[in-house]
Length: 101
Image (cartoon, rainbow, N blue to C red):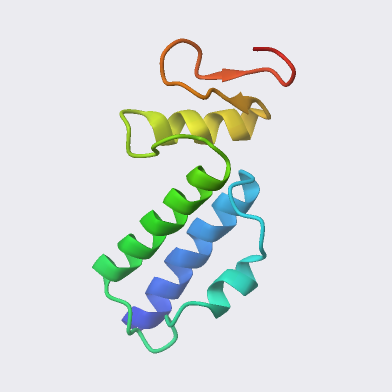
């Protein structure tokens, strides 16, 4: 398997997980169509930066705060996985049942 195919599989897996967690609203196919992984033109560093920028955008759009904060990405993933509302601040509870605050 060439490097481009490996990168494509890795990114598809990552995007599928984001979709499962509700962190992505478009289809995996749609997201993949915006990337140039077929030719292997995206280096690992570029791929990491793209994923990081996408996470930042999602966090901004959903007022989830800084995903680079200590443990914040894990808090966001778990709250979404459990169907909870993401806490606006990192102090106190990580997430709330829908409707509770």
